[in-house]
Image: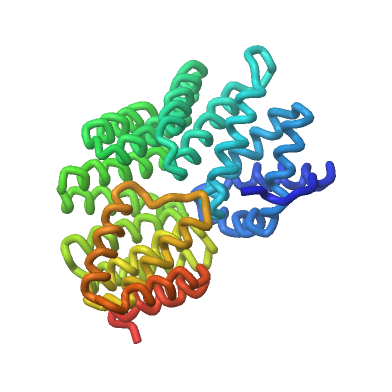
Length: 353
């Protein structure tokens, strides 16, 4: 999707470069929230600013912006722009051009993570491997480790538990003292356990990741793990416990205006309604989640698609003749309205009145 039509002024671009530098400096900490809000407010200027930098061959400045927007590309549902801009910057770069090799490796990592969010597995793998190689070459242990985490995600989408575990453990071997690496690796080790149906092991790894995210003051990261733990609790099944996790995650997602989290959580609320026997509401929410995904460049996380599809089949069957009308109503909801319905749903199942 396009991020605005006209290029910002030089002064505005300088402001945006500085803003994205602050975003990188505060990423995954409690200090990021106001920066994230500023980025969302500047959404329509960010893409045009980067494109102008690329057009004028100011590649270092463009890469600085691209890599500082990792969370933004996801939260705003603009992973397609993030991937395209990262790949364009890397295409324009050449050996001996003076670009900081650390920055080049981080741009490759951004290309990998945004491609993953779009479901572009070949590009996610290619750029993840390139990021690890480039970072290893210059001794950038953290970027190399995060590249391994990105490749673990690629393996997760392919349900390859052994590869998820191997990549995650290598990340810890490379830079296991770094909290961002630890939380990412623990998160993926949880999914490795889940892939082989070890739910108790998955929960333990999620809790370890959650503890680090809380210690870092990262509200978004905490909400991600709470949402995952909620989905896991539905599989046990413990619907009240699941709803409690999902409620906390959704309240944070609403505050942060994270489109990535909200879209996923609307789907989770639909699955919860299915398991709880409210089939009409389930069809409405699952249809609303599908519409929300269609309006962004994001796709459901690995495994979620199958669970959502199975829940929809179950809910349609339970509802019967009214399913077509419920689907129509769900597709017609705005994301804000769907979020309100989803929050009310999880609160009901959690026992909140």
